[in-house]
Length: 64
Image (cartoon, rainbow, N blue to C red):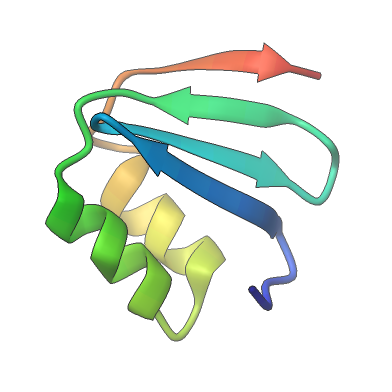
């Protein structure tokens, strides 16, 4: 995965977990599989997260 802001992503049972290059890790809940697939296919992962995930899904910080 190449991104200036996202180090890694994981997806299990509608929970999307994103590790940012800062080391912060967030879980986003009830994310549909097509949204996850869109993230993986996005030209800019950081932009996709800001546009398609952060505004719409509940989240919690799991590591800082």
